[in-house]
Image 1: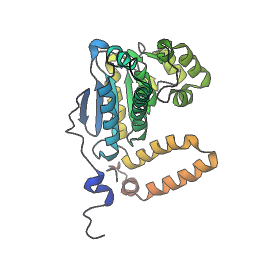
Image 2: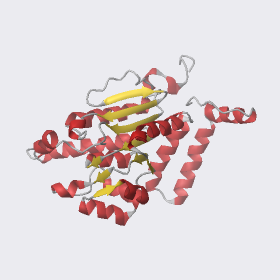
Image 3: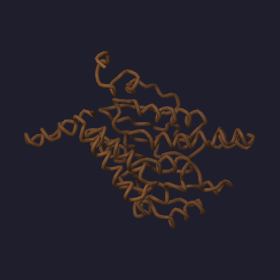
Length: 284
């Protein structure tokens, strides 16, 4: 394999840089390995459209090859996170679609969550104000959530005549807050306040509104400074082990950890420890 220039995981077909990415339907920023996606339609509390759903799906998928992104922050502009699907741009047109068209849409929205969960980078949702419908799903599917006391999270699908089983809600939400609490939110569609969300374990912690994004970015920066390959493995195993028994999970983790022990970052950490220095991880 002497014709290969560099390690296989570094080949052009397996890597890309997202620093220059130009988003069309939201804001995208990069700084020191931390990407921030900001839903930016504050006049309507940052609703999603067909186009923004599709762009989020494609961006999340591309993160698997993005060597310059080590953590991602999801946020909303203007004091709100996301009000869900746009009533005029999405809900109205959906009432006119046939079954194949409806299924195409619901599968596409589900693909957004699959891609979010499959990307190796830890994702932190910074949730302020309204966080409803698909917005609540985006927050739920993130790896961590920071909120504010004024945040209002609502899985309000049943209030528009739909089931609460949307985009993975019935699988993921009970694992975050418990079956009974998830059932209450999905059957009633009521809002969960910030303090209630923190008490129930939906939010990792609450922040003052003005500190929310800085704290989310600081947490993302802390993660980004760590071993990117190993963090990606942790995320993969957190999700993959849902469908495993304990014995299967222990064996899977043995294999995953052995793989991580073969990385350069593991050796860097050892040599830094021996030299009484802080390791500088490079993600390989």
